[in-house]
Length: 114
Image (tube, rainbow, N blue to C red; front, side, top):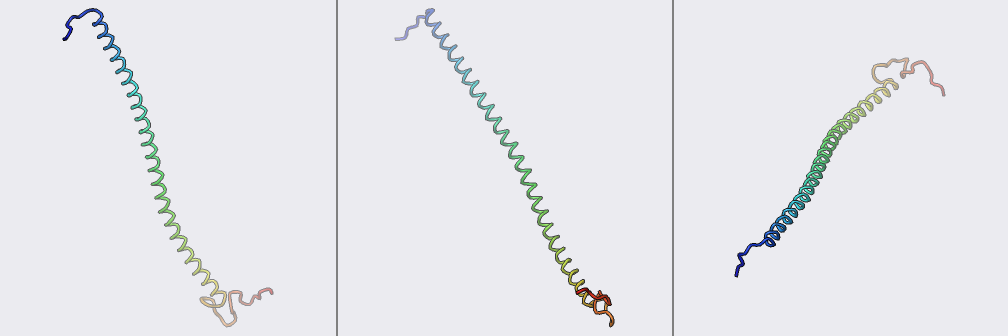
């Protein structure tokens, strides 16, 4: 059987129950909201860090290209240096532009000490 009598005690119990339930929901929602704010803050920090890492990786890629270009330039300079060294040594031995009967090398009539 259902008791349909309403008295002050039952109304107060129902109101108190609703107030407690609303307070519980408000506290839970506040805690949940603060946790969501903290999660959003952490995700934002991670996104900022990933953006910084992206910039560093792009810089590394640029540096790698520059290093490869410098290696090619150094190799070309080595070839040029070797060719110049070969030419100078040839000139010292009388090969090339400076050749004459009286001069055996660039030193010519000047004798070397020793």
